[in-house]
Image (tube, rainbow, N blue to C red; front, top):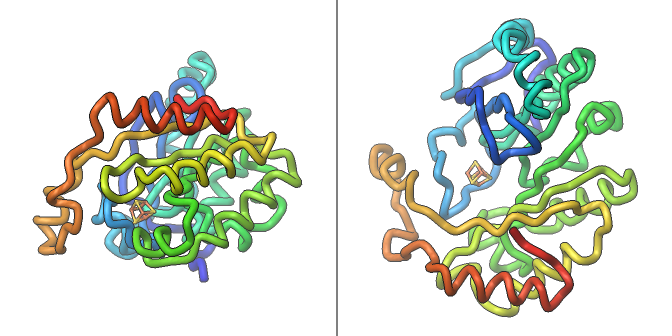
Length: 247
Ligand code: SF4
């Protein structure tokens, strides 16, 4: 179950001028703690909640405040990512609430695994959900993440009922997520929900590999290279065949 109180939580890091995690320029708050163990995680140092820095909501908001006018001018806002931000539901929800009160656009970047645990107010204070769908095949999803796919799909249904804007993210990994069956399945999910406004097809990269080595963790994808342009185009074609434009 998600654990945190509303006044303080564990922060992994921040980025003050993110350009891809939501519209416009974003202040990105990366929270620590994640129940998944993705084979391709580029931030394995963000998985253990208590390895983050303990901060109060007030401290986080004080850090965001100098950027507010720039974020608004650049049509951006605040994105809470991780780790898995919904692992610290109350802390995350309190920050979203305060950002909304300041007139900022808000987003969460999540696997959706804890999506059914958040309350309606949390979602009211969230303008956009960036939802990672790591596979459409339950067995492959479990192989990649060590958890079940169903909570993510349940969360997507819930967001659809609320007509909450969603951007789906899917990582193309040669030899792992690139089968036609898997790609078609992800594309079909994306085609089924009118509240999905955008689909990001992201190439697997190995920028976080050194973090696995530093931590003496076995990196299962050592032998896999990032997909080339042809592989990305093949995947986009499979999405297009289902009526989905993946960018
Ligand atoms: S959900 Fe994100 S932070 Fe968690 S293990 Fe997967 S890639 Fe890493």
